[in-house]
Length: 220
Image (cartoon, helix red, strand yellow):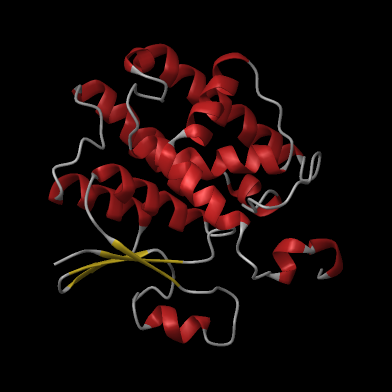
């Protein structure tokens, strides 16, 4: 049975983007259903598909998986996809940086939410956000230097780790975060990935707006 991925608005839903990239890069044929966020119906519609009440959620037969990193692991195991590095040490580091993205960077999430359509250069530069940016840049530089020789991504070929950091790449564009050297080239590689290009184009033509995301200064 064909998997079905339930996602939110492509412009805003960073976790949906992560799951989409993983499935798109796994080679599996899947359907995708968008559920609009922040509407009176959103909660009920999502709960009907995801026990957590959040997206993304992957339905495959009778199984539902409702966390982006869990979806990535499931895709890697089930669809025999090369979503993690082959080398054991590289794979351990890839899982470490993916888990760090999953659980950390709260300041960046709060003050620089994903909004692909927007351009807000200079906004959100709190002290905590600057620390998060520095840590992310260090991760990218280290992974590229140690494991990136086989391609343009953190571990050479595109992996779960790149899917986890892809929304950050969009944030850096939205908020005008300047990157240099290897980090700039890495950001360009992520943005140019075909699955990322397709998602970005879909986000740019969405018509729905979430006021507290699009006009935060007027909805505090």
